[in-house]
Amino acid sequence: MKRRTFMKGLAMVPGLAALERTGAFAQQTWPTRTITMIVPFPPGGQADLAARPVAAALEKILGQPVIVENRGGAGGAVGNAAVAKAEPDGYTLLMTLSSLAVLPEADRLFGRQPSYEVSQLAPVARVLADPTLLAVPASAPWKTLQDFVADAKARPGAIPYGSSGPYGTLHVAMEMFANQAGIKLLHVPYRGAGPAVTGLLSGQIQALASAPGVLKPHVDSGAMRVLANWGAQRTASFPDLPTFKELGYSDVEFYIWAGLFAPRNLPEPIMTRLRESMGQALKNPDVSGTFEKAGSPPAYQDAPDFARFVQNDSARLISAVQRIGKVE
Image 1: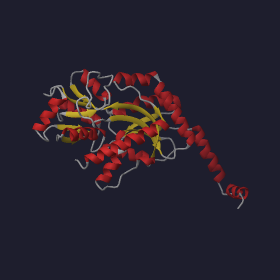
Image 2: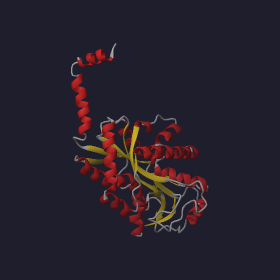
Image 3: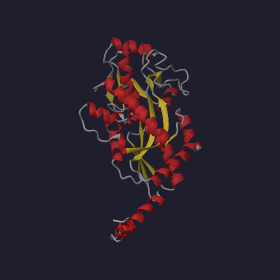
Image 4: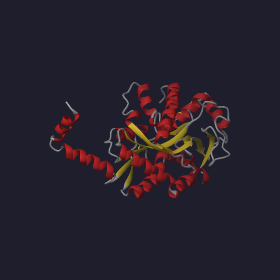
């Protein structure tokens, strides 16, 4: 059938031409209603820290409300899966963390069907990329990482540490360290970094891996002490804090990055506008100032660079999970 005849036939299908025009119009005019940015953790963690200033800036740029919805559970898998399966229309977005790729791999490790795959999501922009820090209560007896390791070796499984859930960012970082240090710690999972911080402050746990922006207010207030930095270099917000590599742990490196994703197959006009809007948002002094003040400077990457970053970082983290193996 000739293309002209075929197209003429399509035009005769009732409502099809109108539907095509409506779809194109919707893409050109997006957004026309409220956008929901899902954070797959409770308030108080790195993803929430990234989402709220960005959502406020996007609201002004796009001219529609951008609501942050905290949808925690399963270390972030519940919220990640919700966006992975959402309609790709630009009205459901995801601000998530580096555990995005780890959680499906952990499910496979235990013989479970993953609730989502990373391939179901499209990277839009990286917002933050901080090295993880090891924090303990200010009242704890350990002044250095060496003190902590010596005590953990003397009392295997006795020191409780918190996480955002099994195989979440905070869990993998701690197990990576424990694995190389040859120590056994007691894992206490929470629903997110915010509740885990509360657990550390209340004395329920004695150690926690988290991002500088989450920990800094409590370190500045004298409630917490930090012992080491999972980054390759020292961080500007804690310049005197040594890295694990400096302290002899060559394979202990972990970052909590936060980035915006959309469901795969988001129409190109919407993706383009969203990318442009994220670029504007990250240049906004109100956004960058909020991050700087929190000790987590912006680490913006546009979609192509962010996609490559996610691919490389995910491969490294999946390898780490496979080395760690099954842990509770």
